[in-house]
Structures are given as structure tokens and as C-alpha cells.
Image (cartoon, rainbow, N blue to C red; front, side):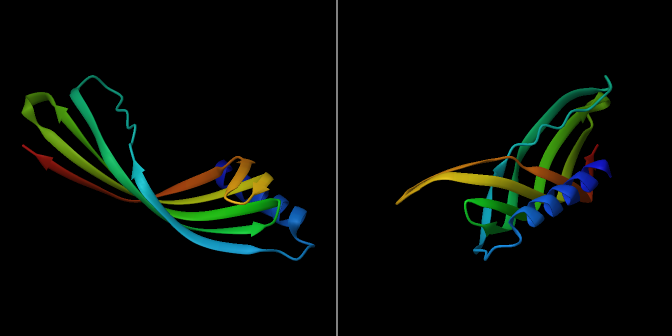
Length: 134
């Protein structure tokens, strides 16, 4: 919950910093592959394999040289765990991720830009599908 409060504070500060001027708004979509790094505590698992996942999202960039880019992303990932007694569990996780990226664009040339900034994000677990095989 603390992370969500920090995300809201960053949005408010960035919005107030660029709020008084005429703004440029760019909209877009993005997607890509991800590689989850799930770890399991305990010694009863003999093998943990992380498979790739998928990220799809929408973003809006508000501002000019100083800008804020909020994003909404859907993240899916898959892992497999081999346990004692030759059992296996396949785990599919679905997340909704909210992110905000305040940044600056100090260099803008035709066909080339430099953007500097950071990102704060908060992720909500939507569903976990555990398909255990005996």
C-alpha cells in the first residue's frame, strides 16, 4: 500500500509541475516479452523453471521537455515447479501493472532523442492458475 501512495504522490507532483502550460499529449501502445524471476522459499522443490511471459500496455505522455508518462500494463508469466515424488505444478500468473514515469528530454534532433527519467510502478495480482500434475 505504501508503494501505491508513493505512486499517487509522484503523479500529483509531476502533474502540478507541468500543469500550468499548454501541453502536448501523445498516446501509444506497447508490448513485449518478459522473463519472470520467481523464487520459492523451502527445500521441498527440486527444480524451478521460469518460462517467458507477455506484457501488453497503453501509455499517455503529457508534457514537452519535462513530461509524465502514465502506463497501464497487463503482464502474464508462467513458471513450472518440480517437487518431491515426481510432482509438477505449472503456475500462470496474471497481473495489472500501473506505472508512472516522470522524465526529461534534454536532446531532440530529427530522428534522435535522449530521454532521462525513472519509473514507479504498482502491480495487482489478478489471477493465479495452478495446474498440478501428479
